[in-house]
Image 1 (tube, rainbow, N blue to C red):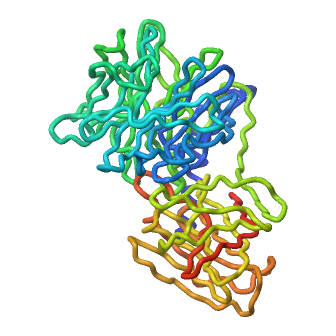
Image 2 (image 1 turned 135 degrees about the vertical axis):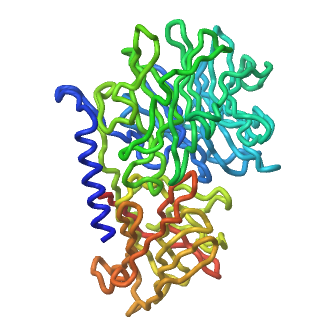
Image 3 (image 1 turned 30 degrees about the horizontal axis):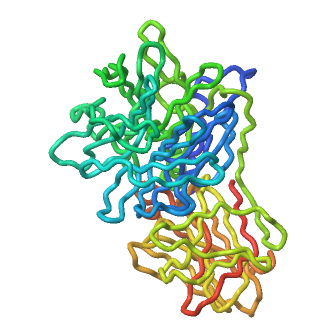
Length: 521
């Protein structure tokens, strides 16, 4: 019955995408959202020459802050992380990396949680070559109990840092502040000034953050986001403000909110505006997909801005909701299906693995035709390597060489909330960890001692899961006949689960993973 309801919802969703959005003429090259699928919250985007670069939140996942490049804002390729090794002063909450380019140097102004007191503040890092990662220059700004969501503005040669302030202060309201930076962009040198304050009685009652500021004509414009960003009860929205001088006074758009969610793309916000060579304005921001929702995370979507030349106020070209389909910035060839297969006996392609930053970075290598993960993490989930889920419906599988260690396929919210199927020697088990309590759902003997086994996870809409196993492509006995799981508690408040592999056990050793496959429906 649940599958029938989800199928009916999918039909409504697809019908909405056809009827609710005014389709561009057929001769126009179009794109469909998302342009960066999977968890890619709080995106920052810049254009350097003919190339766009984007970075996004990684939250509790390392390496920190994935970076992508594109020639057209629609087709994106992974470049690498801002930090392969995490900054020494940080411990998590890797949010809102803001890219900036000046005089041949890339800057990243990022939010992270400080080890010493677990408060979130702003750091800065630089590089000349994005492929080589960034050099961290440490903490840039500490402000009361929290300073997050950096955005950099240059006005008449002077650099300014802007940020969200007072989000955790009970004695005053949330504001977006600014201050002068040094010429090298690495120090705050000026006294703070206020740009806007969140209206506690209006649509911003949940706060204001994620500001993006740019100059057009005689005005500075700001896009900012308000209310709850994340999770099932999110109500994120976007507003406009403008000023003739950067330091204000700023005037909010009377028609705010200018962008809000619908059944197709929920809770849009927190992005950056970039201008194309032909002077079109695009806002790369995040939103939840209406079907996969929190199970696929806040995805990178693209919305175009246009301007009323009489009032000088911007508006979103396709209305006040995120477009399903829209006119592309330029020629685009979107890759619609991100499925892949890796056979470690012959393939040299590397999976884009991520790991939980609350544990040491897993030691692993491809050796002797297999992915070998050291069994060094004693967490109940094992030593886990994951990957971003691009869509909620998929089949993930791994071919395992059996040994005395338990090797798993895992859907991982965090170390306290996960589900998985593991195999060792002659035994399999389906398990879950919920709020730190581990429970074996079912264990099963493998009828003969086989050398290799395929473990499979089938996900539907990110909500319904089936585990099964095969020997050399022949299904011997399926666990899905009696085990169909739901785990609505897996998504964390600010991030989607990752799917991947892990190894665990009481003895030292390594995994022997011969192949992994991800097939999206």
